[in-house]
Amino acid sequence: MSAVCNLGIALNRLGGNRKLLRELISFFREDAPKLLKQIEDGLACGNARQVQIAAHSLRGLAANFEALSCASTMAQLEEHGRAGNLEAASRLWPDAVTSVENLSRALAISFDQPRA
Image (cartoon, rainbow, N blue to C red):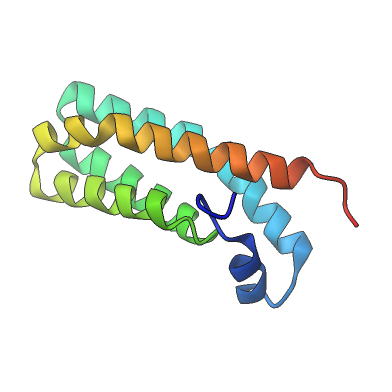
């Protein structure tokens, strides 16, 4: 999981508040699929602004967990949306989906573990 995210750093940033970390994980698990769908829809209908906004939101969510690869991919997607370059955004789309899925799996493992 450390290659995908670093929950130790995230927890430290939250002052050790495990409840808050679990809430952030829950928000991600709820919001990420919707945001991916918004990006996909934006790509399909040529709405670069929609791609930019949804990618920006996903970048912020990923950054909460020190998920640097996912956040970087979303930042690139956000920039392509800002520039109106939907061709480049479309090429990046498979990587974006994979990075969010990888983070979702890593967070699910952490979230579903019994508390110590």
